[in-house]
Image (tube, rainbow, N blue to C red; front, side, top):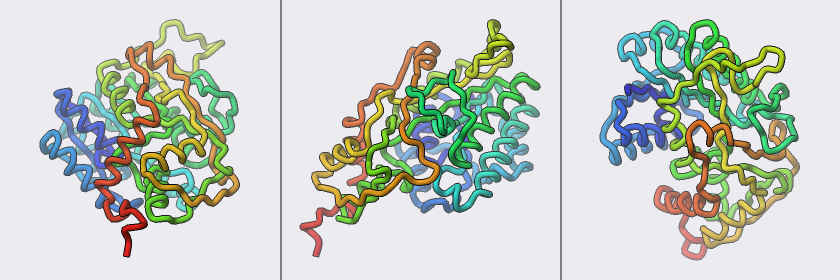
Amino acid sequence: MKVLVTGAAGFIGAHCVLRLIRDGHDVLGLDNFNGYYDPQLKHDRVRWVSHEAGDFPLVTTDLADAPAIEALFARERPQVVVHLAAQAGVRYSLENPRAYLDSNLEGFLNILESCRRHPVEHLIYASSSSVYGANQHTPYSVQDGVNHPLSLYAATKKANELMAHSYSHLFGIACTGLRFFTVYGPWGRPDMSPIQFARAISEGLPLKLFNYGRHQRDFTYIDDIVESIARLIDRAPHANGAWDRDRPDPASSMAPWRLFNIGGQHPVELKTYLALLEKHLGQKAVVELLPLQPGDVLNTCAEASDLARATGFQPRIELDEGLGRFIAWFREYYPTAYRPRAARG
């Protein structure tokens, strides 16, 4: 099928483009190459995908540019949209909240409007485990309420789910929302802990471990994320005929709309995660223990049985194996950062 992937130069987006090309889909990418982090990494991801699977068309434009998005849909007529572009980062939303309104709300509205005006068979979009917010009941289930977000980023992702539902109900757009849990792996974002921690350990710099390293995360390797997306491409949701207005299922609807968790289902305490990084790097960390940061949730753990029932797949790559793959990439991509301390002049 013809698939539009937004955020195609991003971490998840680049891996997704590579997988979909290898699966034989006709892939069109979109990215704005913004400066949230060094755009060079984004360009390098695109070169990596082109080297592995051949060149692919990539449009540079901003999601908030409604006429440009409309023109792209009118010209290209994608059958499926995998919408991964967004302003990411919990803590950055405390500093620059308007970036989240422009990208995550206005930009998503432009995608929905274009899917309405130029009908698609399936819209898959990225949500986040952050939507569970103050919910302390784990594992997090798509049946749980998500009405208490702890950051603006999380609130925009919850808003995306609601916006998608309204368009699905009003205009019959088949929409699938994916709540990703702490995605990591090669080509990851430099603002995320794997690269931040690996660079700090390699360079002997103090590493900040918030909540004194006691909170847990359900780490999900990037290959498990893209495998899930690839299996959902041709599984557009249908209206749930058994949906009960008196006892509504939060993960489905009388509209063609679904939600899934995608998570490793094995939460790990950050101290354990750090110890694995130290093992693969062969160096000890210099740790600075600090209190919990504003906007952070204490623990995350995905309940992903709905995904397994729908696709026959659930994430399976263990953290030790995934971090080993990540560190192998890190050593190659950041060779200066990885020079052992004893070798430095």
